[in-house]
Length: 253
Image 1: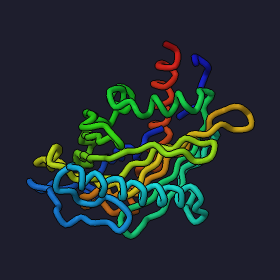
Image 2: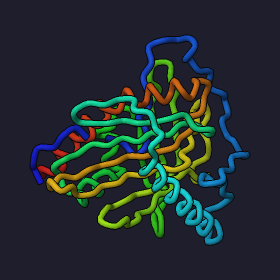
Image 3: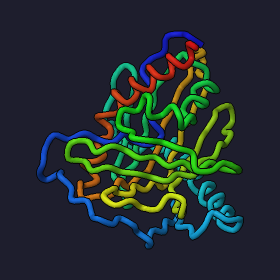
């Protein structure tokens, strides 16, 4: 488990960096709660996480699962970043933007997936994350994530429901945004929405683990979606490097 790994990544795109004030600077509303959010594929609004709502969350996750599988196969995404270690493809969507990132590591697929699911470890390697905590666990896991303010990009948070799926010989973890009274919107923090997110691992013919991260997300705020897409893509190699270093350290214990 202590084998050298190639540069690795995060479930959902890292908070982009910017050094300019205009036109990228944002004015964060004092209240960012949006009760009108309803997506045809995921991210449904929930009154309570009771039994009835749990059924709705599972239905939303199944829709997100289908959307993630489509992202795996999509051929119309533009190549935004390509190096010897990582390839990042993406495209602006009606609701936000899609991003797909692929890389390989020598660590086994089960170990990679286990590490990525560890909410307690996330802030130790994700330099943009302020905090990450598990809200509840059961048939699916609900996680709250808070991201730091970076330059002109205001702080974001998100509430995600996640569930594991088996896909042939691959492992797949699917997420989508939900609303819950346990994690109400916060003043001066923009609530980002993940319509469909996936973290996929599979073993290659060479015995390596191919890792794929897919997401369709709306980061909210005033920065144009096309700018957010390219900023997120440009930051992926560094994000992967940090994830890989954390994974290697954890795998060496």
